[in-house]
Amino acid sequence: ADIMAMEIEEKPDINYNDIGGLENAIVEIKETVELPIKKPELFEEIGIDPPKGILLYGPPGTGKTLLAKAVANQTNATFIKLVASEFVNKFLGEGARYVRQVFELAKEKSPAIIFIDEIDAIGTKRTHGTQGADREVQRTLMQLLSELDGFESRGNVGIIAATNRPDILDDALIRPGRFDRTIEVPLPNKNGRINILKIHTEKMKIDENIDFESISELTEGFSGADLKAACTEAGMFAIRNERKKVISKDFMDAIDKIINQI
Ligand code: ATP
Image 1: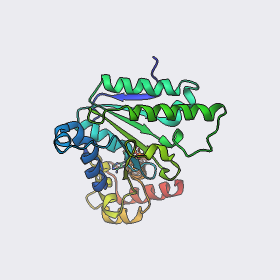
Image 2 (image 1 turned 90 degrees about the vertical axis):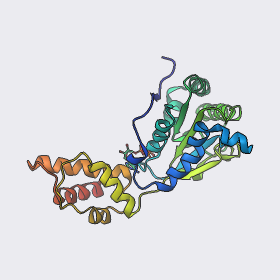
Image 3 (image 1 turned 30 degrees about the horizontal axis):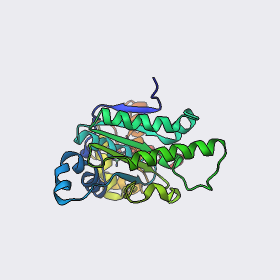
Image 4 (image 1 turned 30 degrees about the vertical axis):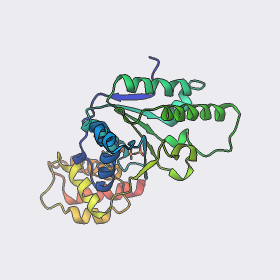
């Protein structure tokens, strides 16, 4: 009961083929997080320390959480997710203790992946304030840095942080030996969007004439989450029109609707 604001999944049910358009990010995360957990001896033999923490950055809804879950799946790891902005608010005065408990839990449950979403909530460059909430945030950050520093990177706990705002992160966080590896998780390009649309329509009844190329062209600037929402909306339009299959027009209407929301 002590540990809230945390989501734990034993072995998330997400695979790399559930993720569209992030080929580079997948290659990098495999090498920097998966490999050290699966084959620590490779790093020992060569005599280097694998990266301790990696930072995923990119716009909201592009698949950062999916990537972290896929790594946990591939390594049979427990996935422990914290949302930094939440635990700062919920644990006034307790943030630092909370961070310590999370790292203890990860060691206990190892192999484990600690995923810290919205790390900027505790790791922003600040005019080092010494008052109230600011001070609390700072203490939480100090505890996180100390956990990272005291951490044996050849162990089987991987630490992945995510942010939409890498530009505002405190330098202390991205120093060597901390989150010193960054991986971009960008908006999908045209091909990426096609892949993501195929993933999210896989279980849908859709008309054979549906042209993913042209849907992809109409959805420039959409994130993976937006594309998923468009597929769901298209399904809603089909239901509303009492059709048993989703047709091209449903997708067009759905895209219009999402564009008006973005
Ligand atoms: P945030 O920064 O807002 O936390 P995020 O980058 O972690 O977002 P996810 O939570 O991974 O994004 O994505 C939200 C949902 O959108 C996913 O559960 C998935 O359904 C869909 N999605 C996002 N990106 C992709 C992608 N690249 N391929 C397939 N589906 C995606």
